[in-house]
Amino acid sequence: MTMQDVIASFSTVDENGNVTSFDFANFDELVSQLVTERAKIRKENKEAIKEQKKAAEEANKEIGEAYYKSLSIGDVFTYKTADGTELKARKIETKSKSGLTAGCELVEVPAGSKSAKRYPKFHQLVVPQAFIDSMNTENAEEVVA
Image (cartoon, rainbow, N blue to C red; front, side, top):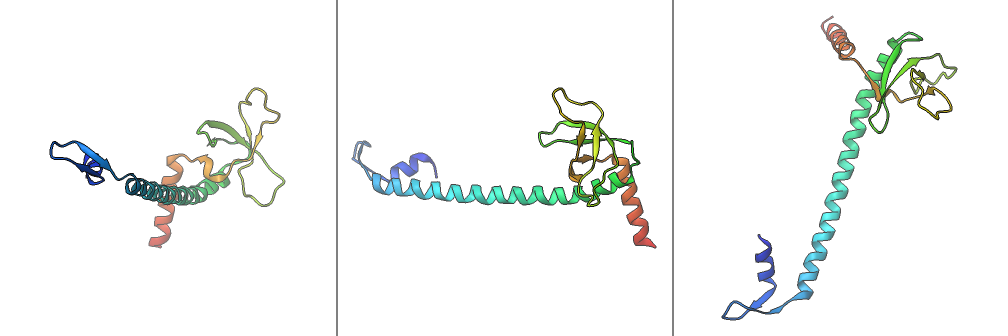
């Protein structure tokens, strides 16, 4: 249905094709219903995108944690910040026993930064493809054995 069809359905036309009256009340009701439906669809899409992002973070968290644990103290790795910037950091030893984040110290400290220490979440780590491939190989060997 085109916009012309919608307008035609709410208007009265004389024999010359001129619009003589327009039913604004019903037209406004239709517009209101469309706006409500659009808001509902946007909310559903937003929630679906949020769920997809959460699922991707969960998958990346396991790989990132395994990668971080495979590194030795002093090894350099890369992680992404929330805005997508990649930073190089060196693994440090932390006093925390929870192990919920990747304790590190930036290789290049940004100007104006109070500290070089950072604690990114595991899903933020940039894991080399070679490590992912080695994990897949190990998992395949476990299934075969």
